[in-house]
Image (cartoon, rainbow, N blue to C red):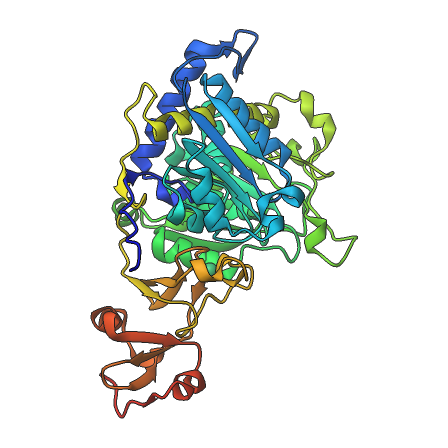
Length: 468
Ligand SMILES: [Zn+2]
């Protein structure tokens, strides 16, 4: 007889910045403010220098499948400063994974040791899979190119502490590799959610990918204006403006384009990202460098420079003494933000605990398509956790059916636009060009999605005679 899996107790995971509501992010920042008020170093107010006892008796387990010393130390410090203890598996070469144990099994076992888990993994979507098997809260400490939510929280908190303006009044420039940097993608979604204006300053050939633009426009209510040069000494760089749609204002102001330009004449924040040379074939790739000469332009007079570190030359060290440079403060805030998150997830903070849900996640606004692996279409992203040989049997082919219609992988959030819907009742299919999101949603329980018409035909389905 099959052993019935007991239903997971209500808990709360954070695998993406979008798992947190705006209110919850604000609450987390209030918790962080409170920690700094009582425990900051009097000589360095962004640094926590006292150890409390809020998490006394709790253990944080850090499962690191790829080395990231800084992230691991930051989480461990956060837990120790809360009075808790930590256990770590930081050497993938000697960990259970090297002996062939799946992530799903490791997480189930580690849930018996620790009260909260942090996972770092090279595969996109690994944190979501871990959360599905854990019986304690899971925090994503970076999963492949997908998400690193505590970095994004740290970035937002730095803006909030270092710039007196409200998020909705900020003009934030993002500079460098906007194509491959997961930090940037999570950051721009979060900025859009909080209503900040985003000025894009990509390095040549490293612009924001189309799918990120598409999501900003369709799901984060952004308006995209293009075509102005960035100024400063980075003449080769184009700038785009992503302005949150504010319907009330738009109807009042006739010429919104002028308003956008006026706003961008003042840059409140420049967020610089590292050139990830491992991702580019051309070793001598042109890359914008932020230095004193760049910041001479008057619109940077009161700007704040952020960088997730480590830097590799895109940020001049002569800036370190400039009062506009706040990247070391930003790194220090990483500890307090992680302390606040752990506190709210364990329910030991001053602010009220994060809401708990059965299974660890709140209900999605999109319906979920869920089939056993190998039934039809699987995630298009080759680095997705569902394609890991060891993990495949623990995954499902699970997608959110997002308006468009498109299929968004539940694990890594990669979108698939082209797919064929086959109906198990009629044994017929037709391509999505003719299916609306509404019609697919209605028929979802009896649908199997295939990547191509040929794949659907090979599975025994025949073309539908007319569109429904
Ligand atoms: Zn995926």
